[in-house]
Amino acid sequence: MDLVALLDHVDETTLATVMGLLTGAVFGIAAQRSSFCLRAATVEFARGSLGPRVAVWLLAFSTALVWVQSAHLLGLFRVEEARMMAVAGSWSGAILGGLMFGAGMVLARGCSGRLLVLAATGNLRAVISGLIFAVVAQMSLHGWLAGLRGWLAGLWVTPGGANVNLLHALGLPDAAGLGLGLAIAALAVVLVRVNRLGWSAMVFASGVGFAVALGWVLTFSLAQVAFEPVAVTSATFSGPSASTLMFFLTEEPALGFDIGLVPGAFLGALVAGWVGRELKFQGFEGEGQMRRSMTGAALMGFGAMLAGGCAIGAGVTGGSIFVATAWLALFCMWVGAGVTDWLVDQAGARRQVVA
Image 1: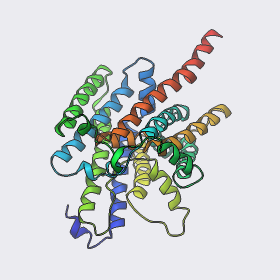
Image 2: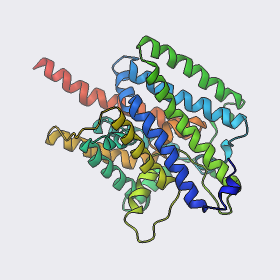
Image 3: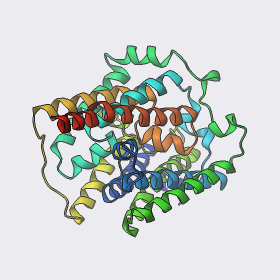
Image 4: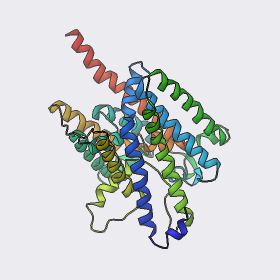
C-alpha cells in the first residue's frame, strides 16, 4: 500500500481513523465469532480446567505474538517505536491496576472488549457496564480520579523514562519472541483438539491476534510517512473508550486511530452477530446483578488506566511486543480474576450446596 500517494487525497487524521475502523472491525468480527474473553478463560482456569475458553484465549494471544514478532523481524514494524514501549511504565500501576481489572471483569462478567462485543449484539447489561467503564476511565485519565491514579502509578516506575523490553531484560534475542509465540500456539492447538473446537473457532480466535498485529503495522507505516507525529499503537479499549466518549461530548472533536477503533469493533461484532443470528436483547437478571456489574465496570475503568491498558491493550497488544509492565499487568489480571471468582462465585456456590 502506497500511503504517500494515499495522503495526497486524505489527511493523516482521517487515514488514521480509517485504520482504527479496519482494525476494530477485524477484532469485533473475530472476537464475536470466537467468543474470545479473558474473564471466561481465567474463571475456567481458576476452576481447574483447560477448557475451550482457555484454548481460545491462548490461540488469540499466541497468534498476536507470532504475527507481531514476525512483522518486527521482517522490518514491517519496530517494537521500540510503539507508544507503549516509548513511555515510562509503572510497576505499581501494573500490579494494583491488574488486580483491580481482574476483579472487575469477574464482577461485570466480561472485560471491556467483551462488553463492547456483547453490547453490539443487544446485551443491555453490557451497554450500561461499558458506559460506566468509559466514564470512570475518562475520570481516571483527566478527571477527579486522575490524581489518585497518578500517585499510585508513580510509586514504582520503570527507569530511564521508557518501558522495559522483557526480551532484552532477560538477555534474549528478538527471535525468542517468535519462538515463544510458536510454542504457545502449539499448546493452544493441542487444547483446541482436546476440547474438540472446530476450524471456525480456530480461525476467528486467530483473527483476534491478527487484528492486534494489523493495528501495529498500519500505525507504524503511517508514522513513517506522516508530516505530523502519529502514535504507533494497536487494539486497546481503555483509553479509546474514554476518547470516543469525549468525541461526542466536545464541540471540536479530533479524529484518530483510537476514535475509529471502538466504533469499528462495535460494527464488526454487530455484523458478525447478525450473520450468526445471535442478535437479541438481554438485560439485568435482578438488582443484585446490576450492582455487581456496575461495581465491576468501575473497577475495570480505574484499573485499566492504572495498569496501562485493559485485557486487550495490556494483555494482548502490550504482551505481543513484550512490554514488561504489560506482562506483569496480565499476570495480575489472572490472579485478581481467579481470587475474585473463588471469593464470590465459588463461595456462593458452596453456600448454596450447604444450604
